[in-house]
Picture 1 (cartoon, chains in turn green, brown):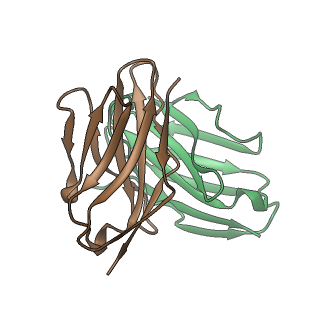
Picture 2: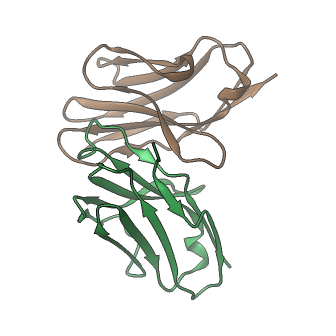
Length: 115
Length: 113
């Protein structure tokens, strides 16, 4: 079975440019998460969707970040404009239920470098 | 509120030695507890989880963890380390009170030949 699929795997962009990260969750999973991982801050939950609806976006750093889930099989995380401090690994993850007590399945990450 | 604290950001053991990674949790309701492992350049994957059944939980690759309510701990152990165990390990907690799974800061395990 295919896991969580993220693209691009690596992106290098210049400050001020728009960045769009894409995610295809595991089929049948109704919860989707976007995480960010950095050395300084560890693993941070940015936003959580349940049945395509954003439930909690309190982890989104600022208005430059936005996320959408137009259908059950696709989600995007957009950064506009990007800044060097946005450099991190961004993980998309999905879960078969609300995530409480259920395993979260992670993609391999999108490595973003903003120069 | 719930939280996890992983004691030690780095742990180094010799190949064949006991692995012990420490995790303490805080939760106002019975928790679900997890250990995830992250190999270099990969996402996290589940190692094992506690969901209020047996207090000793066995996971993949010979790892196990014991839920101790009195100590609010969920330490991860493996009797004999292998070079392939070198990775970062994350303890996590969630409960019926919310949807969030809270991850610890991670412990990087080094295995010396």
